[in-house]
Image (tube, rainbow, N blue to C red; front, side, top):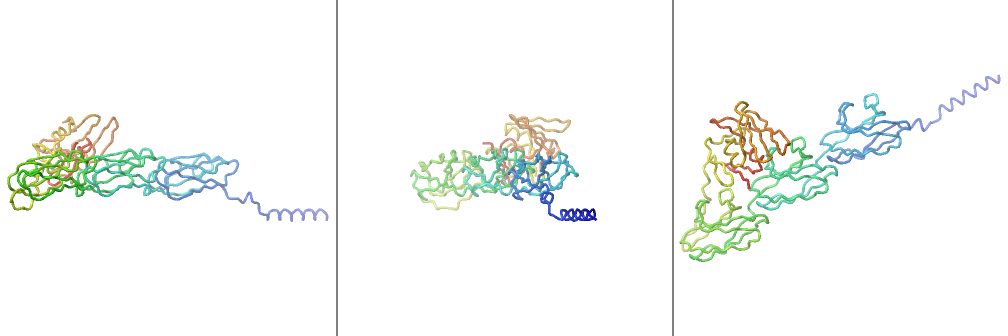
Length: 440
C-alpha cells in the first residue's frame, strides 16, 4: 500500500514539473536584425545578433536577394559573445539579404533566417547651380558620400552623351566635398554624372544632374550709339567670368564676316573699359564680343550696333554661317576629300584628317580592316562594321559600344567623330549644319 502511495506521489510531482514554464528552453533561438531597411551605396550595414547559445559557431552572410546559399558577397563569424556585426562592402543599387547560418557550412541545412534590405543611391547628391556662363567656374558640393566610397567619379558630359565620353572627371570620395571645374564650355545642355567607381559605365552609374551653359549673362555696352569720325568709342564688358582671360572685342562693318575686322581688343575678367580710337567713314558698324581669340562663328557671343556720322541705323544681321557639312577644329575648317556622313544619328568622318587635326597617329590593317589611332598614352582600336571599340589609356583597356560602327565610304575609313574627338580630350558639338571640335 505504501509503495502505491509513493508511486502516485512521484507521478503527481513529475506531471507538475512538466507543466511548469522553463525560461531557458522557451527563449527564442538565434536571430539577427538590421537598424534600417534602406542603405546608401557604401554605407555600413550594422547587424544586431541575439539569442546565440554558448556552443554556437555560425555565420552571417551578405548576399543578393534570392541568390543561392553558395553565393555571397561577404561573411562574418558569429560566436556566443557576438552582439553586433558591421559590413562595409560597397554595394550597388538593388535588393539584398543578410542571412544567418548555425555553422560554417553556409548551406540549406545550416540556414536559420534571412533579413532583406535595399541599397538605394538616391541619397547621394550634388549641389551646384543650374545655369553658368561660358568659362564660369562650376563649384560642385557632394552630399552624403559614404565613408568607404573612395574611388567614385564625377563626370562632366554633354547631355545625352554616352558614358564613355567625358570632359572632366574628378575623383569622388568622402572628405572631398567641393570640386571646381574652370574649363571653357560653349552654350548648350550638359550633365554632371555620379559613378560608384572609376569604371564610368552603365553598371556603376548612380545619377545625373543637368545644367546649362548660356552666354546671356556675358555682354558689352557702348557709351553711345552714334559717334563722329575719329571719336573714341568706350566699351564696357559685363559679366566676364574669372577664367575667361582671352576673350575678344572686334570692331567691324555691320554685316561683315567674322574674318574681317577694323580693330580688336582683349577682354579679361578684370577689364573694366576698352577704348577704340579709329577714324571711321560714315556708316553702320558693330562691336562684337567673342569667347576667345578665334573670332569666328563658333566663339561669337553678341554684337552691339552703332553708327558713325549721319548714317541711318539698320538692323544688324548675324554673319552668314560657314557652308554646310563642315567640320571645324579650333575654328579651322578641315579639307576633306570624302564628305562626312550621318549614320545612326552620329557623324562619321574620314579618320586620317581627323587624326591629324587631333595630333594623333593612324595605322590601318587591311587584312582585318582595323584602324588604330594613338597619341601619347592613349590608343583607340576600331574595326569596320564592329560596334565595339577598344580604348587603352596608360595600359588600362576598356571596351566602348559605338552608336554607329566605322564604315568604308569612297575608299576612306569613316569613324564616329564625337567618340574619337572626346577620347583624345577634345570637345565635340553639333551646330547644324557643322561639327565643331575644340582642343584648347
